[in-house]
Length: 104
Image (tube, rainbow, N blue to C red; front, side):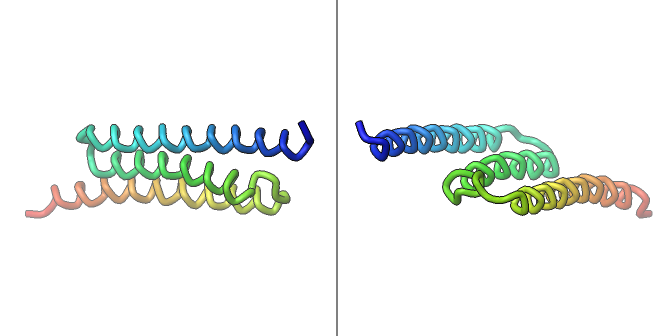
């Protein structure tokens, strides 16, 4: 078997694994929707699952896994921004409800 054919089979196996991982995360998303969570928890859970799926797509289908370190710094910044947004959702949920209890 030639080197090109071997690499192609290796890539196909890798893409099949990514496909099944995305399929599993999609099933997890649907199952998570079946639980009747509070809105802020449901949003946080959905964003976490979507982040895993997006990172798989970006890393392997967009070939970012083999890019230079600048990409990693951008991903770290994006992760920091994502966590900051989750914390803002969490904090705003409690500040809205605490404000409603003080209304006469």
